Image 1 (spheres, rainbow, N blue to C red):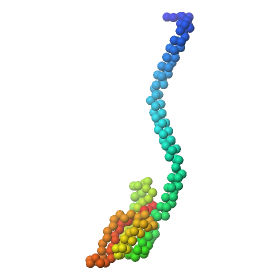
Image 2: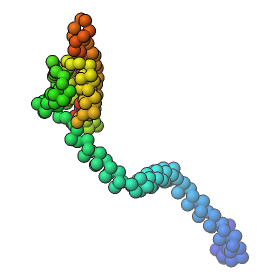
Image 3: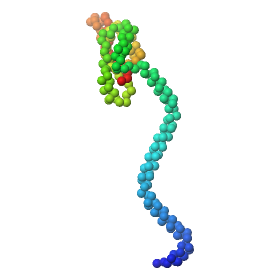
Image 4: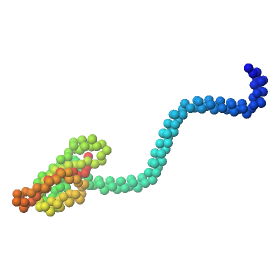
Length: 191
């Protein structure tokens, strides 16, 4: 065993080697104790990198946000007056009576098939839907050109309309008389 004096003499004589040895031991101990947290630190780094990329994309996509908001707001303002409401039965039916008067046809049957309960069920199964289909069943009598005019006006009319089912029949067996157009139509509406 070395005495203290011999030890100090050895350190004085080999200062660089001793310093390197002490530094190596210190670095080995630091790496050993810090190595346990390496996996955790890597996970935190990966999470921060993903969040950083998401924030960078948000900043990039936010450049046109004001213009997009203005465009969506303008489209919503244009759509809103064209929607029907399920609880406004008189106004909804009046739309079809107006088409009847404009085209010279005759509505022999008209009823709104959607009610508040069916719309509530529809919105429950489609919770993100902003619009609901409001169904109508109708029979229109008239000459063939008048029925086509009725369909055109329904298609290009005030409200957004979709024909779900349609059939055309003739009233007289000799095929000379008026026709009957039976329609199931959905108008775009709000709950």
